[in-house]
Image (cartoon, rainbow, N blue to C red; front, side):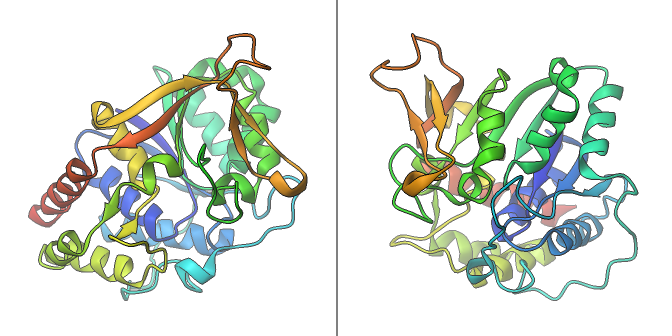
Length: 304
């Protein structure tokens, strides 16, 4: 499954990227970084660290947007630490990011692909929105957008808004109005797929990859009763186990201003949408299957 990953590593992004780089189910064509959990300089560096850690220098990493389209940038270093990936001592990187900016790199990768590609976006959608603004003709080369973000049941940075959408709601609005096939994997799923203490203990025993991921997740400040939500990893899980996530098609609207800024609203009563939908929305998940899958994926990393 060929993928473009647009990310803001970030601890949960790091786990998602680790699996995507090492799972034979996926062919990662490109990784692009965006400002989100920490600054874009740091998210780019973190992506480079992981590509080197897994010896995947064949995968280009491109630096993207340093700030949202209109909104002031505010990071989540209070959750992910100053570097974005504390908890493990990575060696200094030995190679540089791609000379292209993220939008150019995504555009050229799509243009040169023999088939439409899936884009997985686990940070703010600034790079994706800018791509659609600059190159609307490239839509035909995008198979689907699998987005971590949004919520139909309440937010994590405000009473209604999830962090990725809240960080750049104007970009999210552009993406949701693009007409592209969208899968929304938001808090309705990710806050149920908690990585429990038993899973975390097992990871620590699974070689250097397990030690690295255990270190990152242990530091992770996003915690609820029962475990830690590795939000972004759910997008990768969905791609290989869609049957484990309950979904339903909805018309989803993004609020860009006011006290509901960053909210994703589903017109469940068909008051505004005239029966049209624009997103397949995740509503529930088999958390046990998710934890088991995560352990198996890290076992595979350790065995290489």
